Length: 221
Image (tube, rainbow, N blue to C red; front, side):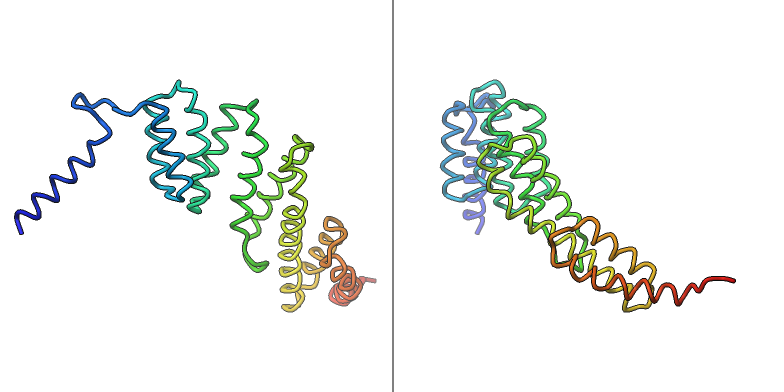
């Protein structure tokens, strides 16, 4: 038992120090780490990819591979569904490299991070709102990019989710006989969500709600 324990500890130290020489310096160059990161990423070993790219960024910050490492770390986090971390990484990349050709891709990825967190209409619509903001920003700033050209469907889904949430809340107010609050929501939907199914429902509800509100607040003579 003690022998097995000793061998386990020995293996831990050998494997843990395999990247470094006796002086504590990295014994792999930037290109080797980039290759290792790429190989792990393609193999969907995203944690290993993050480790390789992080070592690359930390040990060779001025390497021509360093910018790639920043982006691929965020990509790996995206695939791991670590969306908060991925968003931070993408936003940092855009801030540090605003003229890089990858920026349209980065904006689209930020949008997808939020898009992939969209819930049903009875839940908080913040992910849909944030995703919509990013997709619209992409479409406005880079209308000719391939990513902008493909974002129409996602924009529609975001709008549908937000409008669906507004209608869900409006209907809740209506069912609980809070007709003034319901009317305000229906009118909001009618004004800000044209060409949606939710608007059609809201338009049908507005006259009824208006009448009910008037009954609750009769004119004073």
